[in-house]
Amino acid sequence: MNWRNGIFVLFSLIFISGCQSANKIPEFISSPEDVVNKPNGIQNIERFEQFLSNMKEGKEDEVRIVHYTIEGDPILHVLEYDGEIIHSTYDTRRDKYGQGSVSQTTCSSIEEIQTGEDTEYNLEGSGNSEVNIILTVQE
Image (tube, rainbow, N blue to C red; front, side, top):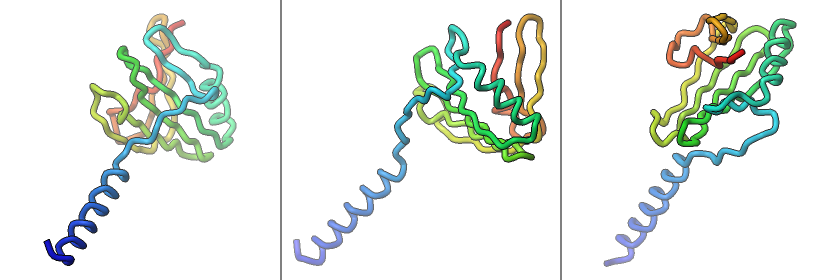
């Protein structure tokens, strides 16, 4: 192999390794501020209630809801309220059996629906029906 071919191979390897690191999923690090939704119940629901209260008052806020699958994989749902609009980011990349994607949408409000003994919180006014349900709280 001559030196030109060697340089080509070297640059190709650098390019390929750079592309692979760009697709790497960021490590999930839990936070005490997270609202945690596990199959056996919700933890830190007070943080979600504070987010709703801040929205009603027009205060900017952000909350991360971590839904755990039965297998224990985290699905992240980040809601950012800028004082007018809710920006929703739904990240299933760490779910081994899920779609492995990130969906982003905006919406106008969060609707609270009583369904028997449960309260369901849904995004309203978003164009993405895939991530409309935020939480279902059992009373």
